[in-house]
Image (cartoon, rainbow, N blue to C red; front, side, top):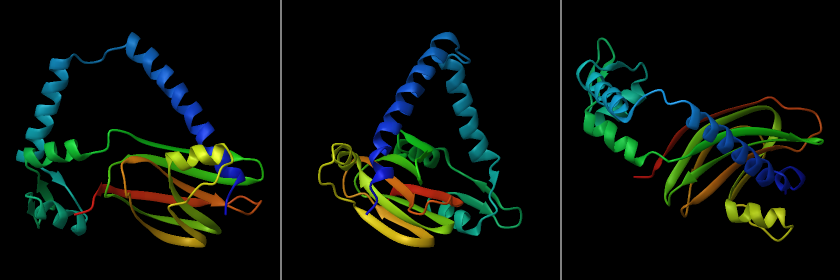
Length: 201
């Protein structure tokens, strides 16, 4: 089981979040680019453009997904017209916070990202590495236990892989961590593509 790298995950995340909040607060207090009315007009224009003009979507898989949810697709031009109602619904279902970050500690390398997920929400994606790595899923409380050197539980773990598909479903609402650990002392090149974050139908 991984230990050294994970013990510093929560501390690093919280420090970065705190710094990020302070910077964001300073920027927002000094600079306002759009008024509320202007932001609303931008939003309404975006909805109108997506519905009446459309957007080119090359992926057949994405086209089919949009059609299943009420969009119209021109198979010749690959232009997809998306109803405003569909966009508004997607915005409401989107997670309020998605933070991606990475870290390196001592002889072990680790990368991690975390998501604020509701119950039954899924994380899907793909990970490719040139060295064997371990993929772990755990929620915030277990990070706290890990930091206090208490017994903790990993929700899901895959060890010693070079390539894998992520397919994880949150069993409860929480802050969920995806941790990629390289147990070797030499560095590893890891490509991470998290392409889906939604409620399982």
